[in-house]
Amino acid sequence: MSGTLYVVATPIGNLEDITLRALRILREVDVIAAEDTRRTARLLSHHGISTPTVSFHEHNTRSRLPQLVGRLQAGQSIAIVTDAGTPGVSDPGRELVQAAIDRELPVDPIPGASAPLVALIASGFPLVPFTMFGFAPNRSKDRVVWLSMITRTAHTCSFFEAPHRIRQTLDEGGDIFGERPIMVARELTKVHQEFLRGTARELSRRIGAPRGEFTIILGPDENTNKNDEVRLNDDEVVREFWQITETSGHSRRQIVTSLAKRSGRSAKDVYALIERAKKLGVQP
Image (cartoon, rainbow, N blue to C red; front, side, top):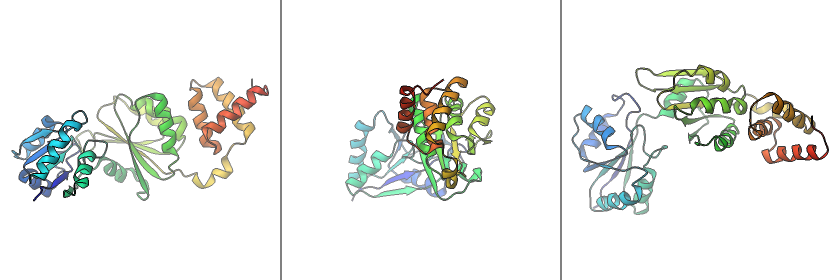
Protein backbone atom coordinates (compact mmCIF):
# COMPACT_ATOMS: atom_id res chain seq x y z
CA MET A 1 0.00 0.00 0.00
CA SER A 2 1.38 3.43 -0.93
CA GLY A 3 2.01 6.23 1.53
CA THR A 4 0.23 9.59 1.63
CA LEU A 5 1.67 12.96 0.66
CA TYR A 6 0.55 15.58 3.18
CA VAL A 7 0.80 19.20 2.01
CA VAL A 8 1.16 21.01 5.32
CA ALA A 9 0.72 24.76 5.79
CA THR A 10 3.13 26.24 8.35
CA PRO A 11 3.07 29.61 10.18
CA ILE A 12 3.84 32.73 8.15
CA GLY A 13 5.45 34.38 11.19
CA ASN A 14 3.98 33.56 14.57
CA LEU A 15 4.92 29.96 15.47
CA GLU A 16 1.59 29.51 17.26
CA ASP A 17 -0.31 29.79 13.97
CA ILE A 18 -0.35 26.09 13.18
CA THR A 19 -3.25 23.68 13.57
CA LEU A 20 -3.36 20.73 15.95
CA ARG A 21 -3.90 18.47 12.96
CA ALA A 22 -0.77 19.81 11.25
CA LEU A 23 1.30 19.13 14.38
CA ARG A 24 -0.06 15.60 14.58
CA ILE A 25 0.75 14.91 10.92
CA LEU A 26 4.29 16.28 11.32
CA ARG A 27 4.81 13.90 14.24
CA GLU A 28 3.35 10.84 12.50
CA VAL A 29 4.85 10.95 8.99
CA ASP A 30 8.02 9.07 8.12
CA VAL A 31 9.81 12.12 6.80
CA ILE A 32 9.29 15.86 6.27
CA ALA A 33 10.37 17.37 2.93
CA ALA A 34 11.32 20.96 3.79
CA GLU A 35 12.25 23.97 1.67
CA ASP A 36 14.86 24.93 4.28
CA THR A 37 15.61 22.22 6.84
CA ARG A 38 17.20 24.73 9.23
CA ARG A 39 14.11 26.94 9.38
CA THR A 40 11.83 23.93 9.68
CA ALA A 41 14.03 22.61 12.51
CA ARG A 42 13.19 25.73 14.55
CA LEU A 43 9.47 25.10 14.10
CA LEU A 44 9.79 21.41 14.95
CA SER A 45 11.93 22.13 18.00
CA HIS A 46 9.42 24.72 19.22
CA HIS A 47 6.69 22.06 19.19
CA GLY A 48 8.84 19.14 20.36
CA ILE A 49 8.74 17.20 17.08
CA SER A 50 11.65 14.91 16.17
CA THR A 51 10.60 13.62 12.72
CA PRO A 52 13.57 13.49 10.29
CA THR A 53 13.71 16.05 7.46
CA VAL A 54 15.11 16.16 3.94
CA SER A 55 15.58 19.22 1.77
CA PHE A 56 13.23 19.90 -1.14
CA HIS A 57 13.69 23.25 -2.86
CA GLU A 58 13.87 24.80 -6.33
CA HIS A 59 17.54 23.85 -6.79
CA ASN A 60 17.22 20.12 -6.07
CA THR A 61 13.70 19.40 -7.33
CA ARG A 62 14.87 17.29 -10.28
CA SER A 63 17.02 14.95 -8.19
CA ARG A 64 14.84 14.85 -5.07
CA LEU A 65 11.49 14.31 -6.82
CA PRO A 66 12.05 10.64 -7.85
CA GLN A 67 13.45 9.85 -4.38
CA LEU A 68 10.35 11.18 -2.63
CA VAL A 69 7.98 9.54 -5.09
CA GLY A 70 9.83 6.25 -4.54
CA ARG A 71 9.35 6.55 -0.79
CA LEU A 72 5.62 7.18 -1.25
CA GLN A 73 5.32 4.17 -3.54
CA ALA A 74 7.16 2.08 -0.92
CA GLY A 75 4.48 2.93 1.65
CA GLN A 76 6.11 5.82 3.51
CA SER A 77 4.09 8.95 4.30
CA ILE A 78 5.65 12.35 3.61
CA ALA A 79 4.77 15.84 4.78
CA ILE A 80 5.94 18.66 2.53
CA VAL A 81 6.43 22.12 4.10
CA THR A 82 7.89 25.45 3.04
CA ASP A 83 9.56 28.19 5.03
CA ALA A 84 6.19 29.86 5.62
CA GLY A 85 2.65 29.32 4.42
CA THR A 86 1.37 26.66 2.05
CA PRO A 87 3.61 24.66 -0.34
CA GLY A 88 2.89 25.50 -3.96
CA VAL A 89 1.90 29.13 -3.33
CA SER A 90 4.98 30.91 -4.75
CA ASP A 91 7.04 28.15 -3.09
CA PRO A 92 8.16 24.61 -4.01
CA GLY A 93 5.53 21.91 -3.73
CA ARG A 94 3.37 21.83 -6.84
CA GLU A 95 5.82 19.54 -8.66
CA LEU A 96 5.66 16.87 -5.97
CA VAL A 97 1.87 17.13 -5.70
CA GLN A 98 1.53 16.72 -9.47
CA ALA A 99 3.95 13.77 -9.50
CA ALA A 100 1.88 12.06 -6.81
CA ILE A 101 -1.36 12.71 -8.68
CA ASP A 102 0.13 11.38 -11.93
CA ARG A 103 0.94 8.11 -10.13
CA GLU A 104 -2.45 7.99 -8.37
CA LEU A 105 -0.83 8.38 -4.95
CA PRO A 106 -3.01 9.95 -2.22
CA VAL A 107 -2.53 13.68 -1.54
CA ASP A 108 -3.98 15.27 1.62
CA PRO A 109 -3.81 19.08 2.07
CA ILE A 110 -3.52 20.33 5.66
CA PRO A 111 -4.68 23.99 5.63
CA GLY A 112 -3.32 26.83 7.71
CA ALA A 113 -2.15 30.45 7.61
CA SER A 114 -2.02 32.25 4.24
CA ALA A 115 -0.38 35.65 3.79
CA PRO A 116 -2.68 36.80 0.94
CA LEU A 117 -5.78 35.82 2.91
CA VAL A 118 -4.55 37.45 6.13
CA ALA A 119 -3.77 40.67 4.27
CA LEU A 120 -7.02 40.55 2.29
CA ILE A 121 -9.13 40.32 5.45
CA ALA A 122 -7.27 43.28 6.99
CA SER A 123 -7.60 45.41 3.83
CA GLY A 124 -11.32 46.05 4.10
CA PHE A 125 -11.65 45.61 0.32
CA PRO A 126 -14.38 43.37 -1.16
CA LEU A 127 -13.36 39.73 -0.63
CA VAL A 128 -15.18 38.20 -3.60
CA PRO A 129 -14.07 37.94 -6.32
CA PHE A 130 -10.38 37.85 -5.46
CA THR A 131 -7.35 37.00 -7.61
CA MET A 132 -3.94 36.08 -6.18
CA PHE A 133 -0.77 36.71 -8.17
CA GLY A 134 2.76 35.71 -7.16
CA PHE A 135 5.96 37.73 -6.92
CA ALA A 136 6.49 40.70 -9.23
CA PRO A 137 9.30 40.18 -11.81
CA ASN A 138 12.84 41.25 -10.89
CA ARG A 139 13.60 43.41 -13.94
CA SER A 140 11.99 46.85 -14.04
CA LYS A 141 10.83 46.57 -17.67
CA ASP A 142 9.22 43.19 -17.08
CA ARG A 143 7.68 44.45 -13.86
CA VAL A 144 6.00 47.43 -15.54
CA VAL A 145 4.40 45.13 -18.10
CA TRP A 146 3.36 42.72 -15.33
CA LEU A 147 1.85 45.46 -13.17
CA SER A 148 -0.07 46.72 -16.19
CA MET A 149 -1.45 43.22 -16.65
CA ILE A 150 -2.51 43.07 -13.01
CA THR A 151 -4.35 46.37 -13.16
CA ARG A 152 -6.63 44.97 -15.87
CA THR A 153 -8.11 42.88 -13.07
CA ALA A 154 -10.90 45.17 -11.96
CA HIS A 155 -11.62 43.35 -8.69
CA THR A 156 -9.43 42.94 -5.58
CA CYS A 157 -6.14 41.13 -6.15
CA SER A 158 -2.79 40.57 -4.42
CA PHE A 159 0.89 40.07 -5.15
CA PHE A 160 4.17 39.75 -3.26
CA GLU A 161 7.31 41.88 -3.29
CA ALA A 162 10.77 41.68 -1.72
CA PRO A 163 12.00 44.43 0.64
CA HIS A 164 14.80 45.65 -1.63
CA ARG A 165 12.35 46.25 -4.52
CA ILE A 166 9.18 47.41 -2.77
CA ARG A 167 9.83 51.15 -3.07
CA GLN A 168 10.67 50.97 -6.79
CA THR A 169 7.65 48.77 -7.45
CA LEU A 170 5.36 51.25 -5.72
CA ASP A 171 6.94 54.10 -7.73
CA GLU A 172 6.24 52.22 -10.95
CA GLY A 173 2.79 51.30 -9.74
CA GLY A 174 2.01 54.96 -9.13
CA ASP A 175 1.59 55.66 -12.85
CA ILE A 176 -0.13 52.35 -13.56
CA PHE A 177 -2.54 52.09 -10.61
CA GLY A 178 -3.27 55.81 -10.43
CA GLU A 179 -5.69 56.57 -7.58
CA ARG A 180 -6.72 52.96 -7.17
CA PRO A 181 -6.46 52.12 -3.43
CA ILE A 182 -3.91 49.62 -2.18
CA MET A 183 -2.80 48.18 1.14
CA VAL A 184 0.77 47.10 1.82
CA ALA A 185 1.19 44.51 4.58
CA ARG A 186 4.51 43.49 6.10
CA GLU A 187 5.76 41.33 8.97
CA LEU A 188 2.39 39.58 9.00
CA THR A 189 1.50 37.92 12.34
CA LYS A 190 4.83 39.08 13.83
CA VAL A 191 5.52 41.62 16.60
CA HIS A 192 6.09 44.46 14.11
CA GLN A 193 3.12 43.64 11.85
CA GLU A 194 2.09 46.72 9.87
CA PHE A 195 -0.66 47.67 7.41
CA LEU A 196 -0.19 50.76 5.24
CA ARG A 197 -3.15 52.12 3.27
CA GLY A 198 -3.34 54.67 0.47
CA THR A 199 -2.31 54.88 -3.18
CA ALA A 200 0.92 53.51 -4.65
CA ARG A 201 2.34 57.03 -4.94
CA GLU A 202 1.56 57.84 -1.32
CA LEU A 203 2.91 54.61 0.09
CA SER A 204 6.18 54.76 -1.87
CA ARG A 205 7.01 57.82 0.26
CA ARG A 206 5.80 56.29 3.54
CA ILE A 207 7.31 52.83 3.33
CA GLY A 208 10.22 53.57 5.68
CA ALA A 209 13.07 51.07 6.15
CA PRO A 210 11.98 47.98 4.19
CA ARG A 211 12.18 44.68 6.03
CA GLY A 212 10.37 41.38 5.70
CA GLU A 213 8.33 40.11 2.79
CA PHE A 214 5.55 42.41 1.55
CA THR A 215 2.04 41.41 0.58
CA ILE A 216 0.25 44.02 -1.54
CA ILE A 217 -3.52 44.09 -1.85
CA LEU A 218 -4.80 46.11 -4.81
CA GLY A 219 -8.34 47.32 -4.22
CA PRO A 220 -11.09 47.17 -6.85
CA ASP A 221 -11.12 49.66 -9.71
CA GLU A 222 -14.03 51.95 -8.87
CA ASN A 223 -13.95 53.44 -12.37
CA THR A 224 -14.52 50.12 -14.14
CA ASN A 225 -18.03 51.07 -15.19
CA LYS A 226 -16.99 54.58 -16.17
CA ASN A 227 -14.38 53.66 -18.78
CA ASP A 228 -16.49 54.94 -21.67
CA GLU A 229 -16.69 58.35 -20.00
CA VAL A 230 -12.97 58.79 -19.30
CA ARG A 231 -11.31 57.27 -22.36
CA LEU A 232 -9.00 59.57 -24.26
CA ASN A 233 -9.46 60.10 -27.98
CA ASP A 234 -6.55 59.75 -30.46
CA ASP A 235 -5.48 63.41 -30.33
CA GLU A 236 -5.60 63.48 -26.53
CA VAL A 237 -3.45 60.35 -26.31
CA VAL A 238 -0.74 61.89 -28.52
CA ARG A 239 -0.90 65.25 -26.73
CA GLU A 240 -0.64 63.68 -23.28
CA PHE A 241 2.24 61.47 -24.41
CA TRP A 242 4.37 64.49 -25.32
CA GLN A 243 3.35 66.45 -22.21
CA ILE A 244 4.25 63.59 -19.87
CA THR A 245 7.48 62.91 -21.76
CA GLU A 246 8.58 66.53 -21.22
CA THR A 247 7.58 66.83 -17.58
CA SER A 248 8.38 63.42 -16.06
CA GLY A 249 11.37 61.13 -15.84
CA HIS A 250 9.38 58.06 -16.77
CA SER A 251 10.40 55.78 -19.60
CA ARG A 252 8.57 55.67 -22.91
CA ARG A 253 7.24 52.21 -22.04
CA GLN A 254 5.84 53.36 -18.70
CA ILE A 255 4.08 56.33 -20.30
CA VAL A 256 2.62 54.22 -23.09
CA THR A 257 1.41 51.61 -20.59
CA SER A 258 -0.36 54.25 -18.51
CA LEU A 259 -1.98 55.88 -21.55
CA ALA A 260 -3.09 52.50 -22.87
CA LYS A 261 -4.98 51.83 -19.65
CA ARG A 262 -6.57 55.28 -19.55
CA SER A 263 -7.61 55.25 -23.20
CA GLY A 264 -8.89 51.68 -23.28
CA ARG A 265 -6.38 50.72 -25.97
CA SER A 266 -3.56 48.20 -26.15
CA ALA A 267 0.02 49.44 -25.73
CA LYS A 268 0.63 48.42 -29.34
CA ASP A 269 -2.17 50.73 -30.51
CA VAL A 270 -0.80 53.64 -28.47
CA TYR A 271 2.67 53.12 -29.98
CA ALA A 272 1.07 53.15 -33.45
CA LEU A 273 -0.74 56.44 -32.71
CA ILE A 274 2.49 58.10 -31.58
CA GLU A 275 4.47 56.86 -34.59
CA ARG A 276 1.73 58.04 -36.94
CA ALA A 277 1.75 61.46 -35.27
CA LYS A 278 5.54 61.66 -35.70
CA LYS A 279 5.24 61.01 -39.42
CA LEU A 280 2.59 63.73 -39.71
CA GLY A 281 4.75 66.13 -37.70
CA VAL A 282 2.26 66.30 -34.82
CA GLN A 283 4.71 66.77 -31.96
CA PRO A 284 6.34 69.63 -30.03
